[in-house]
Image 1 (cartoon, rainbow, N blue to C red):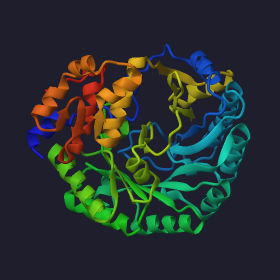
Image 2: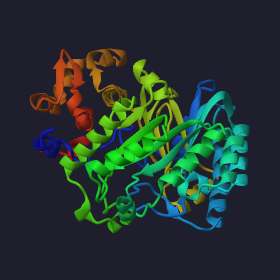
Image 3: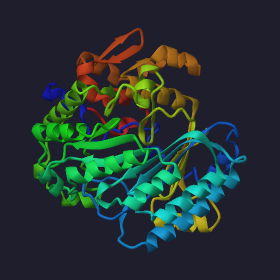
Image 4: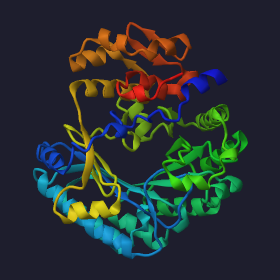
Length: 445
């Protein structure tokens, strides 16, 4: 890929478009009262997804961009769980009867910092407050460095059936440079234990663009991961924003790869995975052909939500815990990020919503186009406009960046049908940005 194109379009400030509009466009005008109203309006028979944020880790990885706190004590976790229980009951009381649940995701942080007995109690409460389907996907993120035999047995009893394991890199030099030392043996042991306990749907997270990473170290780490044969892998580019995440100031900026090196690393990982039989999903996921993501992509039903790519077709996501984002029919809501503020809201008997966004018809149209681009690397803009009751001509004419993208050979456009060229899929965020009406704050040079 040409260095000039990478420098022109690889802007780290571009959103990842897991949702649209994006979080910087959220407003405090959408608060607890609005959230309560939206919850009460949920259709009682439509399945929902639950996302539970656990904002604690036993060690802090310097690359991490998520709000999480270091704790070696059980006390803050138990305090948080008491408030989380209250939030679950509060949300369930607002919603019309026990909502059907098809997907649950425990994110973080490290959800397995929760003690086994407390995790079972949390799952029992969720099952009392919501109507879990028999085939519900219950997924959890795991740090192999602090994962016990008791915890894997607990996950089996709780009905967990998917696990996402943080790997990032198996290169010792890279691991030490980001404070995440984790051996291949540790990781393989956790994978084997999960499978022995019936948790066979395994996801790995890999990162490129970390300090001291090279194409060779990325390929070696990928091959090591492949030996454990996860069902899917998420391959993310490290986003270095030390002004926003203070922990990233520990990272040696002089050891970070440039845009061209990052693109070469991403391409090398992708080639390695595709050669091993994985299907490339959207921008940054890979899945075995029989995995839900690959099947959803093949059927044209791949979705994008706040967790990334998903086969989950629920229109509603209920976010629980500090900073969790929910998607309700009228718009988005996000909880307070600071745990102290989160506790205060819930203890006062109101949702912890700090901000959100009320979707307009045009927002929904643009979100649909952006989602198809991010999922399929193409979008039939006239067809999507017709489905939303809009004329495609003004919309296409207002997307000024499209002409530049076409001139630079990144996309083909024919009668409003936009297709990202395969060799430029790394730049799909820049294509999606052409339809982001709120993005004037981020000019492309």
